[in-house]
Length: 102
Image (cartoon, rainbow, N blue to C red):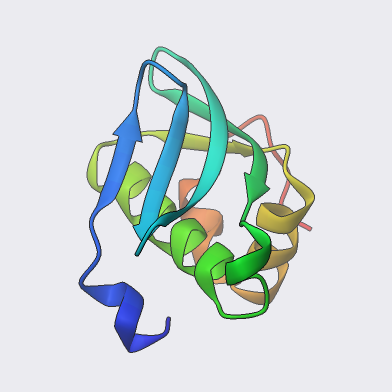
């Protein structure tokens, strides 16, 4: 993760059902659905101003850490999250048992 993102707090916006990372005036986010202690990560989006600068990766990494710290299991729907998991199989430890790692 880029150093500039490490200090930024991840916000779980329960009203909007998304995890948010505010970078200056811009917000990168992941839409989610939650039931019991399972979270489906549905869609990741970074504004054009942040694309290619690691903001989407940062919000994914911070979200995965949040899920692990709070005892959630993950069902990755978002292609960007799924691609991240392929590159970082150590995160398979938080996958829901219904999900088979790739």
